[in-house]
Length: 156
Image (tube, rainbow, N blue to C red; front, side):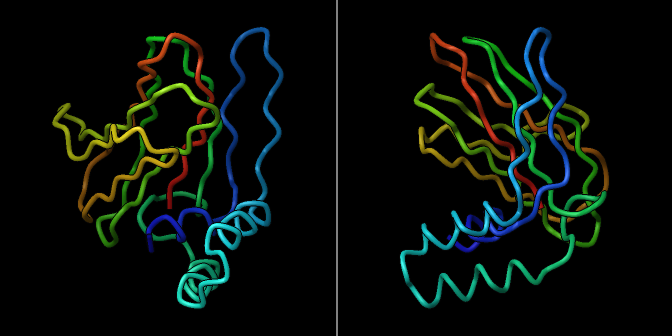
């Protein structure tokens, strides 16, 4: 639950490029994400403390300008991939929040295509935590459903 709180408490930096003939999705703000994390905590003082601690943290496992959130539509039966650069000094937490009911699966691979982590649990929030290390990562989201799926990819 700690990783989930950290991801939801993170701020927004990037929004995915829109697909052809679609408008760019409205970016999710850091304040909205923190509010959702607090709601999920449901008054639990330990979880709320984790949300506050996560809010105070700077960048950790993904190199760039800090915590990132990308919203994307994945067509029915299709996949969407995103290359990531990880930090050698800190673990990376990568999650996909499913928007709607379409079933999706998250897979994280290294540059050679070896699977490092996968979550196909069917949960609304799929999470992978990757140990510190060098080299690029690839986050892949597969939509196994019969309709397009909107997802929100979150990473520290």
